Amino acid sequence: MKLSKYLKPYMLFALLTPLTMVGEVMVDLLQPKLMSKIVDEGVLGQDMGLIIHTGLLMMLLIIIGGACGVGSSALGGVASQGFARDLRSDVFKKVMGLSFEQTDKFTTGSLVTRLTTDITALQQMVDFMLRMLVRDGILFIGGIIMMLTLNVKFGIVIAVAMPIEILIVVLVMRKANPLYSIVAARLDSVNTVMQENVSGARVVKAYVREERESQRFGKANEDLMQANLRVQKMVAVLQPALMMIMNISVIAVILIGGFQVQAREMKVGEVMAAITYLTQVLNGIMMLSMMFQTMSRASASAKRICEVLDSEPVIQDGAGANCTEKGTVSFRGVSFYYPSASGRPVLSDISFDVKQGENVAILGATGSGKSTLVSMIPRFYDPVQGDIFVDGVNVKDMKLSDLRSKVGIVLQKSELFSGSAADNIRWGKKDASLEEVKAAAEIAQADEFVSTLPDGYDGIIAEKGASLSGGQKQRLSISRAVLKKPEILIFDDSTSALDLGTEAKLHKGLREGLKGTTVITIAQRIASVKNCDRIFVLDHGRLAGSGTHEQLLQSCGVYKDICNSQMRNAGGEE
Image (cartoon, rainbow, N blue to C red; front, side, top):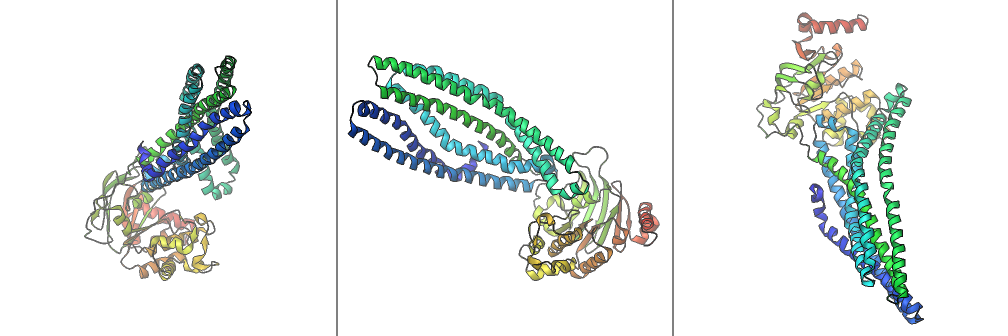
């Protein structure tokens, strides 16, 4: 019912679908009556004219009924497909608005299943409800009425057979319904494993883990098959049981009808019509049982869809505020830990200020909280304690669109999309001219390889940049951040695949092309950050020191240890 609002824009089609279906059903109900007339009055009465006349009438009705059926299918398709399209769009928008914490909770595989399989199940249910429910319902009620008009005694057969069929359907569906949620969860697991292995195919091959990953997928696939089999075994009982009852009921009608024919209270054609009507009635129950299966599957899917739609983003939009500064960042007593983590915080009581136009670096051992720290500037996460200010305003008071328009970030993992090189760079500014795209690429040192592509900036980049090297992907990612011309530019260890010469050219290009931009760089190499205005050193989530390269060598033991370690690994050469 919560999702029914998505059907409202297509209410006209939804109303016309069952109305046109009524025409097809009425033709189906009239056919046995006309056939009995042909048998009793035409064949047995040897009236060829009546046979031809009634046969032509039946043909005309079949054409009318067929046209109604086609119209009903077309109208129902418009309504159900439109319903699914609008729902899918809203769910996708909701997924895009979820915080990283919520996305991790749902898992990528589960969200893909909800956007595809679950919405398809709901679309099929809407289509069935608009067409098949009306058809089977009218056939069920109309068949009973038509049978009773032939002979009231046939009501005994219906009165006995119908409750038994309904009882069987209810018992089977009560046991099968909970299993559909299990099937959906197992499908999530299959999609998750598949998504991980497709996106991480290079790592799988590099570590020769194909067999292990095949076994892991096989386990998830086997679990899905077993869950599906449990449902199918349960439902498999249904149709044979209903068919057996229907056949016994047909025999009962033949016996009753036979006695009535002998007593000259009925005609042979009427008995034949009664058998057809009984079949329609019991077939209606069978089709309704299939409808219940579809509804049960859709009910499980609807709950999963509503879980996404009802999820309120953890990161809420601020009311909006006027900024008093430009390009400044301040941390005030910031502490943070991930909701799923236990133990000590990732960051503890971090405080520092970055002025406009400063070029600062954040250095520390792996796991010291560097990436987490910069992720809180554009509010990918909020601190557990403390406050973060951008341009003199608490980030929680700013609209997310305003905040993130000020910040350009290049992540550790370079994410590229299918399309041209220019399209990937234009993520920084969707209406940028080719000249602006090239200028950004030149600053990021990407122009030299993009220009050598077969089609230059129009050259197609494979999915996730599979056709490029690590350094090329990083430079394209840097290009789109540069094109944005943000107030604050963050490099989250995103120059690791560049040699020191290329990195030096990049920083020179940034100084010349983005004057006044605040640059925050996370790096592992001392050589990459030693010329920064200031360096912040993190150690186990705490700020261990800050200052220039020379100052830290004198005052910060952690920085000195990192520097000495890297010099030893480089053979004593700085």
